[in-house]
Length: 249
Ligand code: 13P
Image (cartoon, rainbow, N blue to C red; front, top):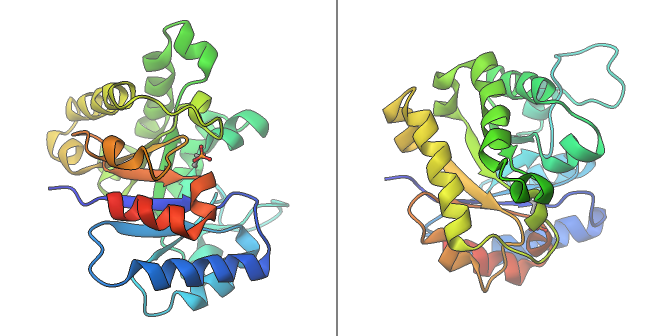
């Protein structure tokens, strides 16, 4: 039985005070015995303070990206070793905003994924198609290529310590969620593709859905057999909404 996981991706939002306030409200509202595992991914600069505020809590700390190198002349990058120093446990890689706005290739994403794993961070590998790709019936080609890049670099066994997030680009920040059937179709396709390589890993792999998850659609999405939780953008910036989503999982 797979555990559910709900992760808030705060993206480049808030400020120092708001980040700590949001976290405080989330911790106060989560209480004990939440069924799902919960994580937050603040902007890099707030990781130390958010990490400190998480001391003694079961909420996981994650970064929004991770370097494909350990150290050196890589301006603007933050290494997995540095993230580990501040208590990070998760690292998002391959978010569509990185792929599409900043031009990160699947090969680079795979290298970031491998570095996260090498240093004991759990990568959350984001994959998903654009609207144009969906409308031209290339969804499975695109998602397959994004997945294969990681499988070629790190192997299927790496997925034993990783999480996948299916995030259709057309559903991110648009208020247009994939229907439960659309999401389930892709999630089960991903799981089946991995099952061909390793049935046990496929069965235990958490596959999250991301893209306009809100308190009113979370429960239906999370009830689908291959959806194991969510990667939440906008709604994770409001403690009440995020808590409702966490409690739906
Ligand atoms: P929204 O929930 O704002 O659509 O963002 C989803 C996302 O990109 C999470 O990584």
